[in-house]
Image 1 (cartoon, rainbow, N blue to C red):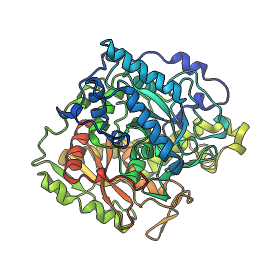
Image 2: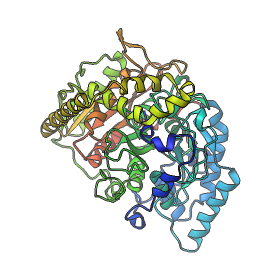
Image 3: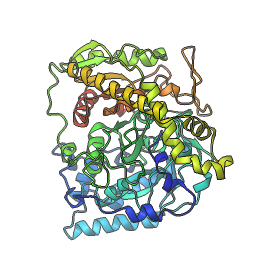
Image 4: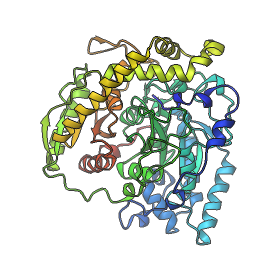
Amino acid sequence: MSSKMTRRDALKLGTSTALSAAMGKPAGATQRIMIPNMVPDAANAVPNSGDELCFMRAVDMVAAIRAKKLSAREVMQAHLKQINSVNGKVNAMVTLVAEEQLMAQAAAADEALAHGKWLGPLHGLPVAVKDLHETKGIRTTYGSPLHKDNVPGFDCRVVQLEKEAGAIIMGKTNVPEFGLGSQTFNPVFGATRNPYDLTKTCGGSTGGGSVAVACGMAPLADGSDMGGSLRNPPNFCNVVGIRTSPGRVSNVPTNLGWFTLAVPGPVARNVTDCAYFLSVLAGFDHHSPISIDQTGAQFAQPLGSRSFKGVRVAMFKDMGLPWEPEVKSAVQAQRNVFESLGCIVEDAEPDFSDANECFVAWRHWSTELAFGDLLATHGGQLNEYIHWHVAEGRKLTGPYLSRVEVKRTALFQRLCAFKGEYDFFVLPVNQVLPFDVNTHYPTEIAGVKMENYIAWMKSAYYISAAGNPAMSVPCAFSASGLPIGIQIVGRHHDDWGVLQLGYAFEQATNIGKRRPAII
C-alpha cells in the first residue's frame, strides 16, 4: 500500500514537466557523508565467493570498498550474477539497467576512490528502487499498463538522495498496480513470489524490494508505506523494514504536502543496514511542509549502546482483531526475548477505536484525488480497487471528514497517553501467514469475513492512522517454514528508539540470518 497514489500529476497520462521543474536539491545535501554503522573490523571480513558477498551487510560492503578490499565492480558483478541466477524464480526485479552501464558506473566509483574521492556513505553500492519511485532515464511503470513505457525525466527525492550518497541505481522492483494492496502482482509484470515458498505471496506494495533484498539481489531497497508496505513484505520475506515517522524522509514530489499516511523508507536484511540506509534518506527538506528539522546522522551511530533494563514494553492482547493462531502465538512467545533484554513486559494495548474509520476515509479521499479524473477517460484500464475507492471517495463530505479528523486526533492523543506509560508497543505485523500467490487478498481470517481488500491489514494500518514509527523484524517461522515478523511501535518521532530495540531483539534471536532455500 503505497504513497505514490497521492501523486496525481505524476500518474496522469502525459509529461511530468511541472513536477520535474519543482524538484531542486534538498537542503543540506552536501553534508550527508557519515561514518558507517559497523563493527571495527568489518572491512576485513571479505568473503571468498560471490554468493557470500551478496549476503554481506551493506555497511560491511561499503567499509570493504573504502578500504580497497573490494571494488565496486566486484560488488556489482556479484549482484548481477545473483539476479541472473535467482530473479527468474521470484520476479522481483522488473526493470534492470543495462549491464554495461552499471559496470561503467561501478568503474567510475572505483576510479574516484583511486583518486582519493569518496562519493558518500553508499559509495559504489547497488540499490534497488521501488517501481513507484520516479527514476530519471529508467522506466517507471507504477505496475500499470498506462505507464508500461514511461521513462521519467527526473528523479524523485529519495532517488536523488541515494545518488548523492554514491549509490548506483541498478533497476526497479515490482509492485501491485499503483501500489494498491499488499499482494504484489500487476498486469505489466505479473506476480512476485515469496522466496521461502514460491507458491506464496511476498506481500506488498514493497514486495519486489523485499524479495530482492532477501535473495541477495540487492543489499538495500527503498520503499514506501501507507497501510503497511514497509512492514508487510519484510514480514513475509524475513527481512527488515521501517515505517518512518511522517516527515522523517521527504516524500517529494507530492501534491499532498500535509498528508501523513504515506511515507518513504528503507528495506534491508538487518537492522544495522536499515538504520544506515535511513541515515542517507532522512533529513530536512524545505520542499515538504511536514519535514522534521533533523539530519539523518543519528541513524548512522552504533545501535547497541542502549540498555533496555526497566524499559516498559506493552505486548498486544488481540486488538479486537481476528488472527491466524500461529501468528499470534509466535509473536506472544517473544515476550521472553524482551524480558531477557531487561524490559518490563505487560499485556496491554492502546484503544484503537475509530482507527479503521479514519484510515479508510482518508485512503478513499486521497485515492479519489489521485485517480478521479483518470477514471473518466481510462476507467477500463484501472483496477477494481481504484473504482471502489473513487466511488467511496465521492461520497465523502466536508462535515464528515472534519469529524473523522477529530476522531483521528483523539486516537493520537490516546496513543500519547499510552506511550507515556509504555516505551514500546509490540504486536504482529500481519494477521495472517503468507497466502497463495494466486489469491488477491484473504477474504476471511479465523472464520471472520473481511469486508474489503485491505481489511486483513488492520494490524498494520491502525499504526499508520496514528502516525507512530514502526518496524518489522524477523521473529519466527511457521511450522510450514513461512516467515513471521514482529512489529515494534515507538513513541511519536522516536524512529531511533524503534531501531535500537529492533537491533537488540535481532541480536538476541538471529532469525533473520535464515536464507531462502532457493539461494
